[in-house]
Image (tube, rainbow, N blue to C red; front, side, top):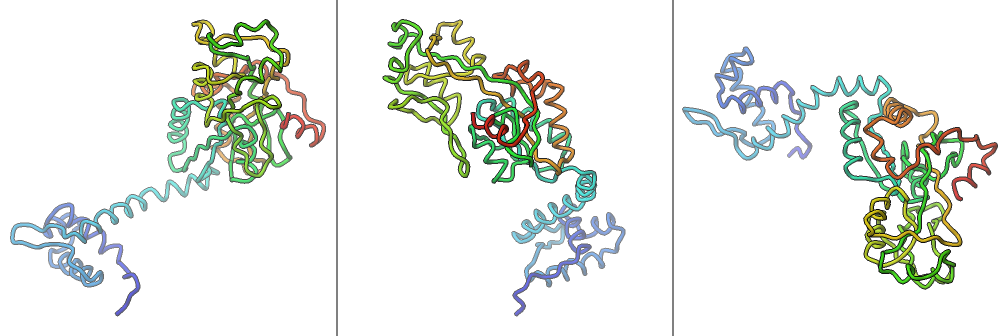
Length: 332
């Protein structure tokens, strides 16, 4: 017995699909401009080839067997793929990436904004498979360097980590120290010292870097740390009073006005965080160029992803004179 897969005739499959959809040999014959006997012969040969009946035949109509149902589903997928294949090949020939992985910094991520951007990209490049990945701090660079990321939104620093990448400065996140209104630190005279702060847990989002050295956003020596998976959970931790730390000024603005959070001056404030759009040099396709254009002109579809960023800080960014300067900027 031959255990190999049968060598199925594409025209036989096309004939099968016509009979299955029209539920009639004669109707399929008329549709395909063939004789009914020719249709019957081709279907019988196909059934012999696959080794199982595909139709239940009655005097009134034909219906699919269980095997026929499976074949119809698979055959439909094949013909849809064949119809789309020329367009897909033309897209690749026109320098459109067949697969594109966008890494998004946790500081900028918003589910609704990411979905809107995905819709924009899918409409512009219908045959590209898109993958959005969420990363934290040096994990953004790790995705680019070691996990096949094509572009990153919000890579730390204004300069590239090495010459394999190019950057476009997006702006800066400014941090503000906040606590819940009933937190004990609201009763301590400002500015708050490190000794005042280390008595309470710091809430942080853990760096997702695997091969690169993980960085800690803010934590004092001897201070307890509460690690959470994303920035939204960190915000909620501040609101409930579970811990303390810094949050993007734009993110907490409304909470401060409403009295849900209180800003406190500290002796050692956190430095602002410059963020960039980063892409791999030398392999820039049309998807990459499209994204660059959206962020450079600050298109409406991408601005919600920059809600925490002071985009005016992008301005004129001085170029790094050497790789050591670029690394120092990234790891600051």
